Amino acid sequence: GAGVSQSPRYKVAKRGQDVALRCDPISGHVSLFWYQQALGQGPEFLTYFQNEAQLDKSGLPSDRFFAERPEGSVSTLKIQRTQQEDSAVYLCASSLDSTREEGVSVTDTQYFGPGTRLTVL
Amino acid sequence: GQNIDQPTEMTATEGAIVQINCTYQTSGFNGLFWYQQHAGEAPTFLSYNVLDGLEEKGRFSSFLSRSKGYSYLLLKELQMKDSASYLCAPLVDSSYKLIFGSGTRLLVRP
Image 1 (cartoon, each protein chain N blue to C red):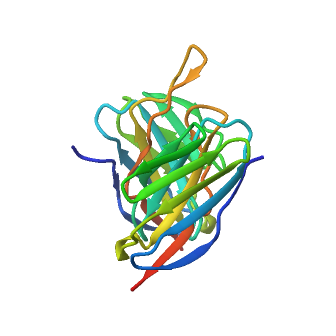
Image 2: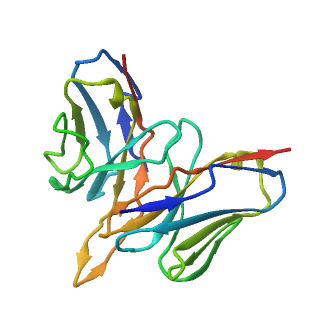
């Protein structure tokens, strides 16, 4: 079946502009993640959704970053008043489920989309 | 805090074997993932270890020692297409949060 898709693949924004990045997870995947990847670095966790609930947003770098997943499927990462330091690749990943049942962690592999490369001028 | 350490770059010859090491210090531990990432592409899943020992999957094997905070990825019969970055990612604190190292760029030469 189809993997995780993201759009746009490339986005150029002028400093101060708002941008919206879209993620379509694998159908049926409960969990959705956003990561930020700077050049030459590994991805850094931004936020995590389980269905429509945003359970962890500890990685969002500032209040200019906002993510939503209103119907528990497609997610949008919005960045307001973009700054040059926001330039990076934004990766979305989904997994079937990542829940804790009776004290036992249930871990599912996260499958990544191709990312959106954001360049802020 | 979280600390993951991998070599920045490695070079190997086509057909050879290469071992990519990863050491980690994390708050909580629920297993460790290895991902492969070609330039400009998405990370793709290679392996997941939660118990100590070696997991073999074709040309790729991954080893974990929880007591030592150490893992390695072993690639056999290297092919040119194996030139990529290899990301070590412990799962920490919870059952979902991956903490990635900076990755090891592997260059396979003819």
